[in-house]
Amino acid sequence: MATQQAMFAAGCFWGVEETFRVLDGVVATEVGYAGGQTANPSYEQVCGKRTGHAEVVRIEFDPDRITYEKLLDIFWKAHDPTQVNRQGPDVGSQYRSAIFFFDEQQQRAAEAARDALDAAGHFPRPIATELTPAGPFYRAEEYHQQYLAKRGQGSCRL
Image 1 (tube, rainbow, N blue to C red):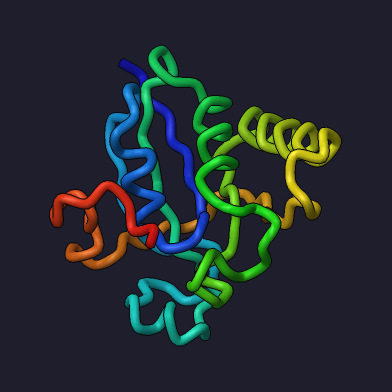
Image 2: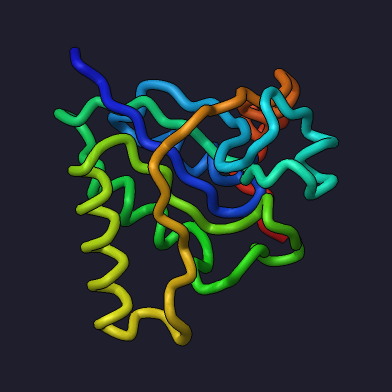
């Protein structure tokens, strides 16, 4: 089985990870930090808003069982991509909406999906999601991995 990777930021990584972790075709997930300038940041540093990183989930998936386009569809539905630097009660650049693409095919798919949703007026405001080449991923501390699953929770929504 040849797997692929996807990486998304859509607010607090606990809920984002759980959204993708349970999908058929997702082989593994891990939460961490990406998109900033500080190497090997801690959670406290990222929350201090000085690293430039977003809270992200990195997904390993089997493209024969779930497509990247399906993952994108779930990404758009799992959060409000029109908000800048926030999701719900969580405020700060670490909670921004972003797609970190691993190749040109993923970039084209993400751009096409974003543009189609905007053209259709799917959201009340324009999509603010960043599309950025995937750079270094820094795995978050172990207590953040599968945080909700370890506590028997399916989401962190109020």
